[in-house]
Image (cartoon, rainbow, N blue to C red; front, side, top):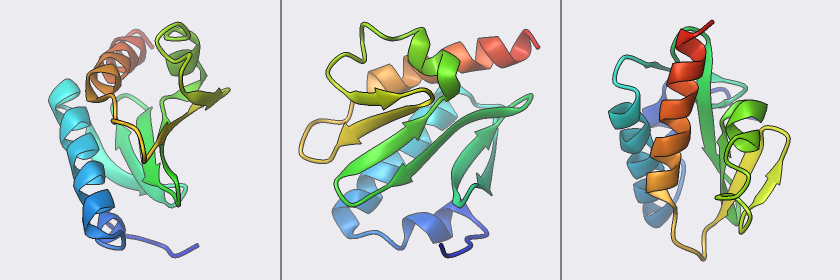
Length: 116
């Protein structure tokens, strides 16, 4: 795995169409969590606000969104059409990316982290 120092450097490694999606996800998270800071953790873009908030990354056939186990568990009904695991959601590249859902989950995680 290549080590990236910035989210910009990470995103620039993807083809243009994927780069646009990743930038839009980044902007969506920024809007939902304006006080969160950007970093790279686990080799992928991460937003930190009173601890890890959310992570995201590009893969061959999907975008991975990592809101932690609570971010998946608390949105189970809205996530039925997506592949999920304990703390991971996969948004397939051949389907529309649910930016509004990313916003809802990120705002949930902000409230959760503030309660820590």
